[in-house]
Amino acid sequence: MRLDIAYRLHFQYDASVSESQNEIRVRPRDDRRQQVLSYRLTTTPATRVLQTRDYFGTTVDHLGVRGPHRELLVVAESSVETAPIEGDPQSVSCERLADVDFVNAHVEYMAPSQHVQWGDLINEVATWAVRSAPDDVCARVLAIVQAVPTVLTYERGSTSIGVTLEELVDGGGGVCQDFAHLAVGMLRCVGIPARYVSGYLFAVDETRPEGNGADGVAPAAVSVQTHAWIEAAVPGFGWYGLDPTNGGAVGERHVVIGHGRDYNDVAPVRGVFHGAAEAEVDAEVIIAQPTAPASMVTEPIRRRSNVAVAPPTAAVADHQQAAQQQQQ
Image (cartoon, rainbow, N blue to C red; front, side):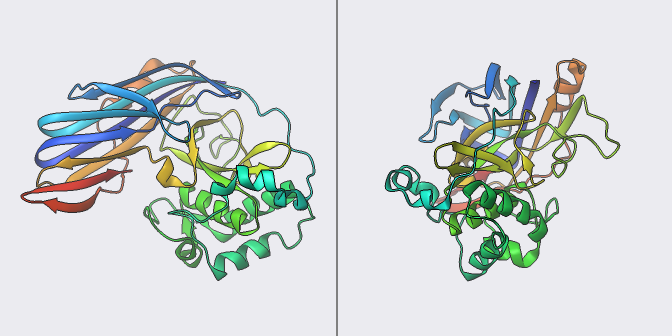
């Protein structure tokens, strides 16, 4: 499936800031399932962009603006060709999860991480989820992924970055990153290595795995946010991708940006600015198939959207200048 993606990020400050430095993780990755045909990142004000790869293999665009400015617009445009997943993992005994080589190769995806900490409550939920599953790794992975939507209700704007897994379960609602974090935590609880995946989903509704609208019609273009799902390590197979937000498989409509232990490893943008100002930020993703009119992709991305994004959090003041964390 060919998909054209435009990611727009717009920072506005209520007073002039003297400098801003950011690292952006929005470029789709190249792997056996997807190929990036083109990618371009532009900024206003214009600035140089340095591109690197991080520890997890995710492309990072580093950019900075020096000099007074009151806004920063970042637009990343890419074209990607995706392919279906080839084959599902076969039945694998849970005993193989204890293999020394397997454990050593996946140790960082089995331990607690910044956004995936758990205690008795998450252990109980994970045990409940796999209570009827056979002694099979894939069956347990699927049982946990399908259990998450019964524990959480999808509620846009109901949580913020940093909410704990226990708070999620107690609150009963969340968005895609919360569904992914809870699934990762539950999988690690039962000894299955799991990682958080950041990307894009070509769908009107994240909770509908087929990607169509309520009327069953496939869209030509959609206005969304970045999406998150999970991958579990299966002995003898590799990484098995599933989407806890809708309980379905990962397919051609999913475009991977990168993966890590949790959101913190693949946050779309992270940075700081210098100045005694408050910041507002909004973000939008437009995904379209080539058959859609070009204006459906470019026009919404060039003007300010109404998509709300959590404001940056304050950092420690440095003499008379405040440094604030910019994170979506």
